[in-house]
Length: 174
Image 1 (spheres, rainbow, N blue to C red):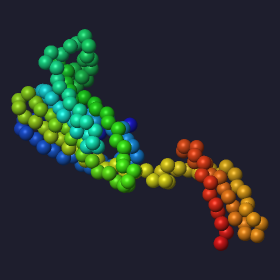
Image 2 (image 1 turned 60 degrees about the vertical axis):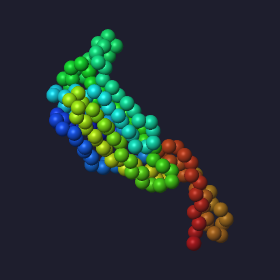
Image 3 (image 1 turned 180 degrees about the vertical axis):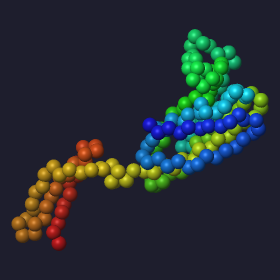
Image 4 (image 1 turned 90 degrees about the horizontal axis):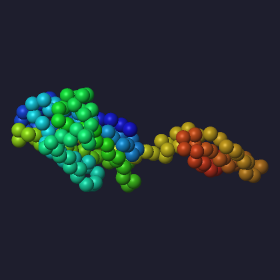
């Protein structure tokens, strides 16, 4: 699993920020860690997460009263966020499209604070579809067979060391 850490100082005005583009190969599960956003002055009340890949918008809202019987106080101990927080870790799995090698999307976090300010954080992500060579990685020869004595053409069965798939190839002499 890949991890993206998002850090910000105290939000004292309406803020819109676009972070640097991050490239991922394949279909990654990305862990967005928002615990680095400072809530010492202003507490995050609600957050809308738009993943950018067409899935439904995820909504998080801070409870008015923190229920210590049902929820963990780990955020209070580790990050000093008394009364709990909605700025936790959020995991999402992206799947690149089969029709193109590159897919550019934007994960967007819209956070509203108790003083009326908001933070709109956009994380551009570039998904790169794995190629044929990424899928097989390293090949081993399972067996070979000569076809025709005069031409010396060969049929070879190759097996991927990565996923154990078998590939039959025809090697011809020119």
